[in-house]
Length: 399
Picture 1 (cartoon, rainbow, N blue to C red):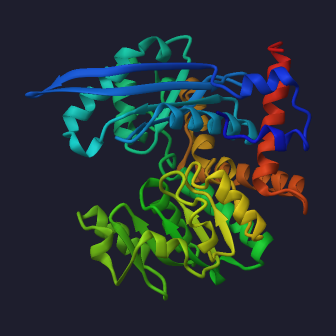
Picture 2: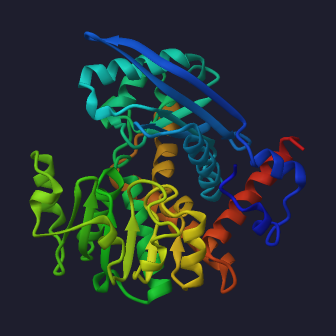
């Protein structure tokens, strides 16, 4: 089932019936078992690869490594990538891959072996003509992408690699960089405050959440609450993000850093200017959306709001900057890495940041202007993205 409300969008843009049918379901799905001996144990996990739509280019999306992942979740995330690349005018299609396993239960070498087996099982998807270009996602990292590159020997077959292995300087931070660019634009438009005046809570301190907090702190923003899977911390005066990142890098935990603890439910209900859900999906739903007291929400994670929560927040007049806009910095940087791998172009870290910020400014402005006073930002972003996909499919003669 599509995450897009086509009935609602049909009142905004023209969606021909064949196009709607094409976008309502994935273009291709691969389901297989990853099975291999790991030491004295035999490991077996379900794995999925989904291509939602490739009218605009090769399927692009991260590899999610999590014990609770499902085929349906993988389908939804692939669809979001189709919308995200279309909205930001990045010439990729939408894809996603998932491995149903807990990475923390594996040693480093065991995970390496599993990633290699993943490539082996779908090797033809990674070699010319390349059908799928993965990147890091929840549970995977630049090292894993370097392992994939080591198996394919094709630099442009994977993005999110370490810079010394053909990756892009600034790629790892790019999603957080883009989230902060969206925050700055949204604060100016919707709550009429500069970043220095804003109090922020961030749910999630993985790659996206930590770099979002880092960039916000560097701009003078008061980050008052942060949480991860272990719990959360709160400091009304603002958390020292740089010290927190150093503490965690040294082996500490978020809860040990202090000073005061807070749980996820309390964090989501804080009376603050800005809430950034940057962890898992569907953390705001029908049972807790009414408790949100933030003036603005910027989605750092993919699909952090259910459809029911979205309606509740819209009715309450709380603007939401949607995921396909707010967290698009990662795919913008992935495109730069992919293009550089094909051409040999060298890109510096600050150039990556500048490209992400420029794309965010252009796309945010286009979405906000299209939304006007009548549409939510999500409806506007979906409409613009779907319109681009419809026209791309029509240009290719798909209907």
